[in-house]
Every structure is written in structure tokens, then in C-alpha cells.
Image (cartoon, rainbow, N blue to C red; front, side, top):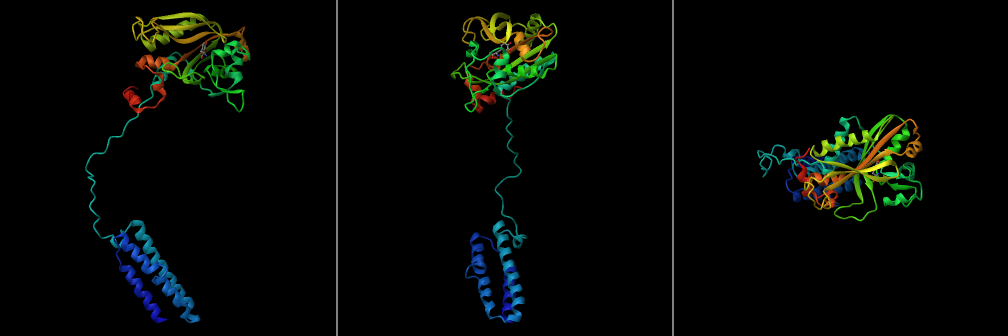
Length: 348
Ligand code: DAH
């Protein structure tokens, strides 16, 4: 027994003094001490020769030795040869020059759509409009019926709709006008809000059209709101957005949710109204639809149409963005090509 105890002490010393530098040395250590025919196993097999009164004491020593041998191995394995025994050694020379300046962090850029939306929003905020948002997955009532478009109304065909197959009452909103309905239903008057957001239409994608795009809708409801208020609000917007030289015209139009309705054009500043692809050689570009909120819409949303009047408008963000930055293909706005997006780094 003494012999065995001395052997354990000796091996312990050996392990204490060992320095393993390479993966091969670590592996050799494992095989010598911890392998299936290694020293720990050999000592274990000696147990059967130990008399039963000493078994407990010897077993404890042996176990302690086994844990010691294992922990040494684990240390080396995790630090690949730089355990305590190497602590005093000089670390290998690194090839990295730590005095060199770091790589500059790449700064992202705002998306041109967001830049245009931010500009539009801040223009309306200056005259007291606040921002509200609504869901992109809508139900039929908020997107159509409440807006004076009951089922089977032919004007539903003006907007090709993506329906959700699981439940045909759900759809991807075709316009942000659905948020008007939600705000009116809340019933807090007067309302002076804008609703920016993404909308969806089942349209063929081309350089001029996309099935996903953005709108900013506006709504103003109070007592005695008139068409003159609508015109002044939108004149102000155009002046701030495009500059004082841009001309504006209103054309009568039809929307089921407004009466009377109009579309507003601005003079094409790409070609100075001389005629180009953007204005389809007319000198004018349509930027929004608008009108006085239809009394049916007010009543559908629980507002007293005898007491209150209001105006609303909805405008596309993509076309304005394309005009502002001279972008010729709408698809560029959703392809996330960083070569395109990086051009907007300097714009805030
Ligand atoms: N919702 C219309 C569309 O997407 C745009 C619009 C027209 C909104 C007139 C309005 C409005 O609020 O008054 O085509």
C-alpha cells in the first residue's frame, strides 16, 4: 500500500511540473494519464489488491489524483498549452500592429422613402397635424364599407385587393384611408391628423408601379371646415415641399369617400413643364386625391354630419420621392441595393 501511495505522490509531482506546449504533447499527456490503458486506470486496477481496511483511504487518494490529472488536462485543452505552467513565459509575438488606426465604422443612411415621409410629416406638424398609425392587415369594413364603399360597389374595382385566404374578411389595406376610419370611430373631435404607412395593391410590378407602396393620408374634421381650408392647407404643403415656384391645379375627380372630390397636380419641375416621361408630356404631375369627407362616412363612424364637416387627402410617397431625387424606376426603392441606398448618406 505504501508503495502505491508513493507512486501516486510521484505522479502528482510529475503532473505539477509538466509543461505542455503543443496539441501533440497534450494528447500524449491524455493517453499517458487518462487513456483507457493510462496510469489512472492502472492504479484503479490495483484497488483489488488493497486490503479492505485501507480501501477507503486509498480510494479517496486515487480519486483525488484522478481529478487532479483531469483538471490539468482540461486547463491545457481550453487554453491550448497556456495554462498556469506557461504563465511566466513570454507570449508569442502577435503579427497585428496594435498602433494602427482602426477601420472607420460604416455609417448607414436613411431610406429615400423615409426621407420624403419625414419631410412631409414635419411640414404638416408645423401647422398642427399629429401622426397616427393603423394596422396593415385590415378588415373589409375599415378599408371599404365604412368609407362609403359597400359590398358590390363598383368603385371597389379601383383598387385591386390582396385578400387573406384564411379569412376573406381580412385584406392587406389598399390605402391609409382605413386609419381615418379608426380615428373617427374613436370619436375625439376635432381631428387634425396625418396617417403615413405602407399599402398594398395587386398590381403588376413595372418601372412606374409596385404592389407595395406608401401613402400619407390627412384628415381634418371640425365645425365649419370648408373646401377653402382644404385648398389652403395643400397650397402650403406644396410650397414647403417643392418650393414657391411650383404651380398647383385642382381637377374635379371621384372618390366614394369624399364629395366633392378632386385630384391635385403640381407643375413638373423635372422638365420645367416642357414635357417629359415623368409628366407624360403634359407638364403636370398628379400628386394626391382629396375632397370633403362624405356625410355617409362621418355617420358610418358615429360623427354628427349635420354639425361637423371635414376634408381629407391621400398622397403617394413613392412618386414624390422619385421626383425629388430623380429616380427613374420605382423598383429601386424596394430592392435594398446598397449601391443605390448609399447615395443618400449625406441627406438627413
Ligand atoms: N384613398 C385614395 C387612394 O388610395 C386616396 C384618397 C383620395 C384619399 C381622396 C383621401 C381622399 O383621403 O380624400 O387612391
